[in-house]
Length: 111
Length: 114
Image (cartoon, rainbow over all chains, first blue to last red; front, side, top):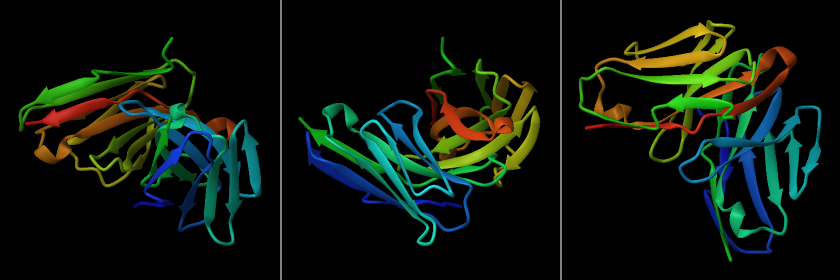
């Protein structure tokens, strides 16, 4: 069953602008992760935030987690054309053997 | 050195045939997975194996039979292929015994059933 749902489904912005993607999930989680997928490629892990964390940064990425609302957001600052990709949130149960992905947000950054 | 490699990259076959996809990881991970990505990019977990043992089987038809000969390999055999099996299949691995659930993905196998 699908766990995470992302919003928006697609996002088109100009280079230099910030991009914000949201993810909602349904059940209790151990952690939430964000992945990027370039066209025709496998997914690449971007950042992991644990259920007891509220915010995490990695370079131009900022992730927030609100467990009371069962939601997370990914902010990409100062976007570049190379950021054009699909972005997926994923949640893992305690055992870590089952990571479930949302439907993804397609981001297009225009140069 | 590719961390998670799967072969073939493309697979075109007729309905009713049997085919296999191979996956190998050189990361020393203890858990491996198969995911299916449909034409709408929705990614669904199929199987996960931990130390060669099946942990998760997400109600996948028994035409799909994974096999893990050792911790570094997880192959997927599909019998009697159907049109609906057309998708991109991704192998992934992770190190769950260290509490790190970060997944490393292969580059995918695009299966087209004609």
